[in-house]
Image (tube, rainbow, N blue to C red):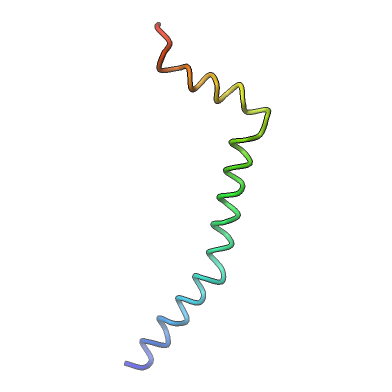
Length: 54
């Protein structure tokens, strides 16, 4: 039983030390992409799409 607890502790520390910064980096990259000035026209066009009549 003690070995199982140690493996869970190892897995938990691996997740918190490795994957958390990876996902924070991915989140920051998505935010930067969404707020990048060059993409404004694409997002504005996508926002108007539901209101457009064909």
